[in-house]
Image (cartoon, rainbow, N blue to C red; front, side, top):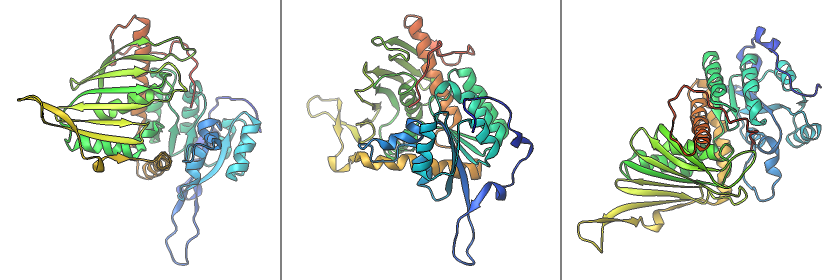
Length: 384
């Protein structure tokens, strides 16, 4: 097994495999129909790829490896990482036969249907393109999608042109409480969205893109942003700012200074009420406007009967990663769009890069419709 990363076109591109050759059968009773299992592989076996499950406080499914292993329709067949210790740890824990130090070798040697890219951000671009060249059916890429908006655009277009499903792991898109909030909004329970306030714990690319993705999920496409730096952080800044939606709604982006102080919350105000999601998705509160008991001619927010509120134990969040993999499988088979698509990942990255640009311009407004390539100004981005 070779060490290091190299980027070359896989020879498998010239030898496409049929569906039957690319999948393995699940044993069923005699005479029963035989469904197929999708063959999955992971590039990058660090925290989110394989190791977060080692944290004794994380009782849910927190890694790509564990999520694939939890879905019967998937067989986890291989992993790649240049670190020999990580590689062996993955193979031993997940009972996976094939391990590679060179991801290109893995793409060349294995018949892969589902590919997870869990490497450092600056490697997402060549790895996703290599997956497309290798003929995979679907790619599940960690966030942020890429180091630059231009790279992300090329990744989205390459997958679209090749018919490869591209999903981005803004995991809360598959979390039931955030989806419940979306349903309540779509049903009109809080009326027209007027403002969205979001708080993230720091690191504009690692954690901020999660928040920006959700703000788009609820508020629609954004028109422009402005931002300022909060404290001194390196190599990834902590940015707070303002966001304007095409709908006319506005967003406030609040940021902590210490990533270890984990606060992730959303507060959505509408013409008829309010939804608040706190505890990083463990509690949803619904408020509605009612006639004020104090002022004639005015309305005030009242919390809906507490028995109607939704409180979610932290352990139940295990479903969201498994739900994401099931969604990936469904889309790989149908060609449908996943809950968080490549386009969604691109849009969240564009907001983050525009905020960096704004902060460098002393809080100037930066349009999200500009054709100017926005890079992360040479930042080395973390992948968590």
